[in-house]
Image (cartoon, rainbow, N blue to C red; front, side, top):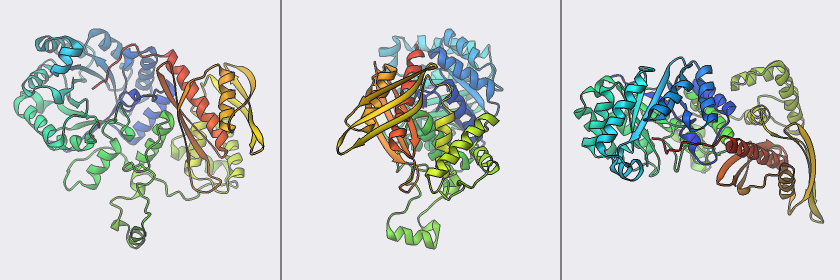
Length: 514
């Protein structure tokens, strides 16, 4: 393909969601999908429909609602997966069946128990079956980078000859290095006759920290679709990071003469949303979207930036949508200004929800001297993205000090029934968590507890992220409030709701994907 346009295939809702504790409800997935549409991605891989009824419904909901992107469903190379996948995505404006099978000898011998010829026959049969539903069929050779090149060429050739219009070459376990991956792509282009007539895609994992580098190396050899996730989310060390790929192409277009359709000003809002929904915080030194990405601590750096930003900044925060952290609203702001700001964030609330949000904004304004964009985002996500929660906090009261035993009383709504419980603890957070567990009857292992300030100042909202585990199922939750104990309670209840949802929607079919 001669065009220099590279398609962005976002798999945050499929591969990203497979990271431990990152399961999302259908409503959360739809929220992220709307933001991905706003970001300008070309293809959204909405999920793995046969894995569970919950995932099927999530994919179907996205396919029915999103109109600005192609919607893909992942399917193993068998009729049941492909039939189920089509049922989920057929309502999309441009649905894509993404089917795959492993091709490396390691997988054939130890996982599939198949011969090479048997796998080639499976590829042919699966792609032909998918073509009965749509011409938009993608085929992936799982573990391609550990597959013998001659056999990889045969597998790709069969997939093209039976109707695949996109061929994906995944570095499933993050094993390859850029020069090696470039050679794989170059060899395929030279030896597979029909490859110039289809879109060549790559899907790189980050186990050696080379996912973005490998993806760019493949583009230089002719790949024109790259599969990636927001914040690099994904199994193990994650996937190639969408924001890093896009900005590497934009900032260094002189060496990487490729373009994407991504609206870069939507990168940071998308990163924040995915972090809030999954409960996975972005590391401070993360490229492009980390809290320190545009921070300058050293005096010589500060002096240089003040004189000329380009001395130490190769891009501006505004290019990726990072707010300048200026005050935009306060206790004297009216409904019109507040609604306009919400719409800029992508929140379009009905009148009832808007009035509730406006009241809570006013309450927050009374507690804080300054209200920042991040505060409003936290407020909205905390109160309105969890409307279907089984457990809902009504009120929290606690007392602690150097001369008293910490105690907490929590009033909580459980499936419509109001319950009040009091418990003592080693500290106020411990007391609150014990009361919540007693009320809900859920006592998971608390694997991690992290507190961060959303903005600066002693009146900043605290954002708490917790990770819990029960019976091998992991979930994460977030909560925000000017009182860190209240934020802690919200995060814990959020995690319990996600834990309950994941127990009710187990994944029957499991795979590392591609």
